[in-house]
Length: 292
Image 1 (cartoon, helix red, strand yellow):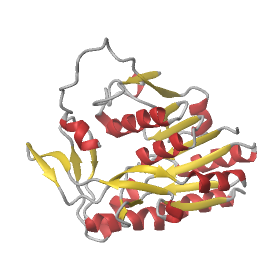
Image 2: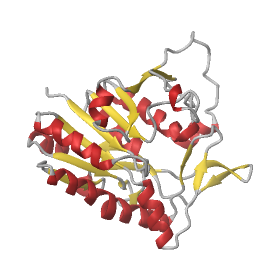
Image 3: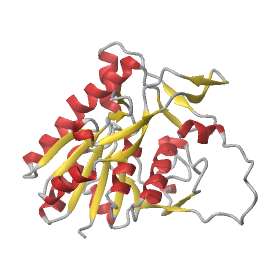
């Protein structure tokens, strides 16, 4: 079986999408199989501002932050990802001789998701249930479609939204979408490229990058600062879902994918569980509930 690398291009404005595309193009011409998953937070924020759509984030009781996707924001997300971020990436790859195919999770039923009925969040210091959030968690990936493209030498360029069980689109975190794709494809490596050199022990100090970060198999991640909370949850989901290795690396540097594969990254591993204790009656934490 040929190995596949899944690359997640972060939407942070500091990330260099052209450098990522140049690297992917070079690797593809060498025969590598690569699927590119992308977000577009900077495009989403800019388009929301132009459309006068307020944006806000939800923070779970465990400190993990995610975008609040009301109906208007869902439209902005779809327009920004499918109409701005994706064409930019596809055009850059095609310009470098790559057969790139842009897909949202709706195309060909690529990403199927379970709609979240409510989110537990901290709002103005109080724990509340937020019910107007149009988001979901990916539960199924159309791997047959992806394998067809990869076998033909193409690079799938994938983004939210996903298709919920009720037949309507939902937003889904792009890191967790990349994790679902990597797990479903049994990827050799998932590379999450972001605006930092990896997981930082101190979010304010880029020299504090960790070579390895162990994430517990359940519960809150060990680092949530600097937007790392959801990335570590995504990394865990990828490893538990079938990906062999997950790296969090710098998307601002030249040759970012190959640099990450060469060791300039934080490798995420699943921490060993502590000695068995009776947790039969232990309720899930609020953060665990919010992220299901």
